[in-house]
Amino acid sequence: MTSVPKKTLIAAAVLALLVFAYVYFSRPVALVATATSGTALKQVPGSVTVLAEFEMDLKSEVGGRIIQSILDPGSIVKEGQVLAQLDTGDLELEIEGIRVKYEAEKQRISVGSAVLLELQTAREQLEEFERLTRSGNRSEAELTRERRRVRAIEQRLELEEVNNRQLIDGYENTLRVKQRQLEKMTIIAPFDGVISEVGAARPGDLIGPNWPLAKLISASRTVEAKISEENFADLRINQRARVRFLPYGAELFDANIVKILPTSDPETQRYIVHLDVKIEPERLVPGITGEVTIVVGERHADANIPRRALFGNNVYVVNNGRVELRQVEVGYTSLTTVEILSGLAEGDQVIIDELDLFRDGARVRPRLVEAR
Image 1 (spheres, helix red, strand yellow):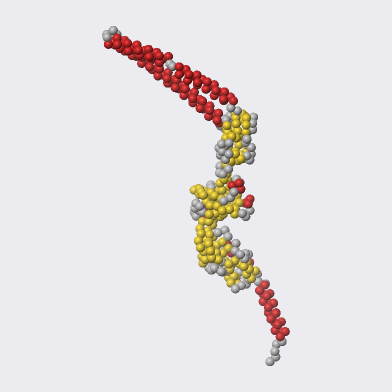
Image 2: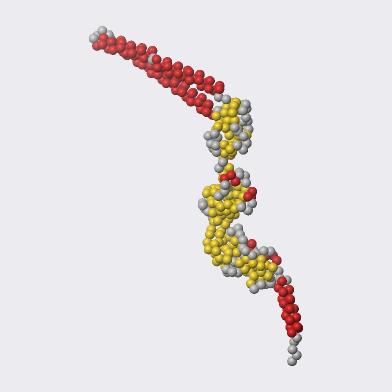
């Protein structure tokens, strides 16, 4: 029997290895991730907008000439701070004139009433008439007339007292009205905030009642999230969320739901919730937008895979270098992962990229990547 030369065997082995390597490396590369057990999250997405909690058109209730103002766009103001002052000179003179008359009337009343003296004299005379009538020196008719005279004087006194009270009350009320008007000529900040716009608010400007001076935006902020109708039923107070604001790139902020509004936005038909976001207040600039994911469910899962591996209810599994089309039952879904209830087991490798390039039964070279 003729033996095969050793060199021939080596050459055949090298050729076979080269053929295997060619066949293997000519297979397309499939990026795969491993199905893992762990926590499955059900999340719903939404859009967010930062709003000033409230804003107000700052107006003067009374007219006048501005003599002092610190209103300036961008200025930060505190509740109770004086923002503008109107000229109060004319009103103060008017108040002083009313006060002088008021004091004079009080002094006149304190001196005493001439009618009261007349009444005292009339009552003394009535007592004398009653004594004379009992002794027979005056008739009953004369006594009746005297009693009527006393009653008439009493009524005059009562009317005078009513008029005096009305006069004093009128002065006091007028002084209160004028004092209130005086207070309104000092415009103060009703809450902490920032001046965003300024109208006629410079010293020397003459304004009328309800004249818009500036727009004041509150320092407090509301982060408003809008959620689609199909996801609204799962929302609850205090559910966890993650927020990303467009100006801050990929940075994520923890949040939770603090308010759920009962009606939808009439324009978008989306429901509105308010979020408490763990972020520095100065970074919540009114008008910035972003996106949110809210955790509405959480449980243990036997198999979680990246969401991008799923198409319809199917995945591609790589088993011994061959692609296998697998139908699966989907459970909880988050933005990045999907819970698989059946059809996959922990440790199975699924294709996660360029799914349209692969077919059931095709041979591939799996390359494991970390699931994200």
